Structures are given as C-alpha cells and as structure tokens.
Length: 117
Length: 109
Image (cartoon, rainbow over all chains, first blue to last red; front, side, top):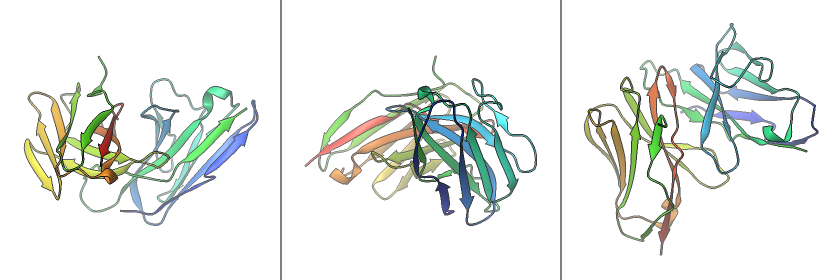
C-alpha cells in the first residue's frame, strides 16, 4: 500500500471563504480520487483527479465549487470554494497504487475534517 | 434503487459468534468488489477484495460473491470486540468505487 498524507487534518473556516486540501503520496499511483463523507454518512465520490488534465466530476459536483489539481503522479489538491455550513464534512483523498496489476484497490488518507461556521 | 445497498444496522453479535454482512449492487458491469472497515473517527481500511464468483478466505474473514444475483457478503468468524466498526461494501464500476451506506457492527464481550 501507499503512505498518503493529507493536510490540513482539520480546520474551522468562515462562511464564504475557500480552503485547499493537499494530498501527497510516497510513491507513484495510477488513480487519485477525492471523496466526501458527511456526518453519519457513507463516502461519496466527488471526482477523479487526472494527471495533467481537468478532473472528472461526479453528478452533483462542479469544478467551480471543487477545483482539483494533479500536477504529477504523487500529488493532488482539492479546493472547497465559497464554503457554506453544508460543506462541513470529512474530505478524503484515495489512491490506487501503481503495482503493475490493475487491482482496483484503493487506499485512503486520514482525511481532512472541515467545519464551516 | 440505490446503487449499493447494505443490510441496515446496527448489527450486534456476541464475542466468538459469526457476523454476516450483506451487500447488493445494481451495476451488472461491476467486476471487482471490496470490503472496507471504518472505525469511528478514522478513514476506511481495505480488508478484503474479491473478483470471482465463490468464496475467498483471509484469516477470520470470508468474502462471498455471486455476480448473477448481484450479491456480495462478508463473514467474520470468531468475532472480537476489536471488530466493532462500520463495514463498507464497494463494487467497482467504470473504474471507480461506489460505496454502500455501511453496516455498523457491534461485538459484545
């Protein structure tokens, strides 16, 4: 598996501001994804972070609200823009390690717990 | 119909018993299936993957897959209090994992 570091681990933000979450992996990975886990809920996929091109967003998520970058194979950022209390959630970076076989197994970072006041 | 449905919890079993967790999915194109365990306040941890029909055993865990019935399950034998967590079923479709709502398992000493 890969070691995945997310920053910040938690933050309290004011309504209307934006926050960028970073995800750094210690080895090259094929796929990187961003998930959201709202309180008491399961994981919802926000988007697939594509290296060197625009992210692929799931239904209900748009680039203006959740811009994503992935400049190389080991790093990605997710920005939560113009935040409202409804954005209070845990945001999770997940990766599929580059193993030579396409197992589809994903590993998760520790998450970034965001509270919007 | 939800894409992934898991049996509603919480599921409570005594220590040493078998815990049975069930999951159905709607995407017939799904080829890979994963079970994650999530402790409260922690991120999900991969515990089992299964790709072919039948059973796959790993220690106390057995995953069962029936693609014709679009059904996947996880059995935990000799359940321990440390197994108390939420278990998430995640079929892979279109190159991405879609998670069920999870089943909370409580193992009582």
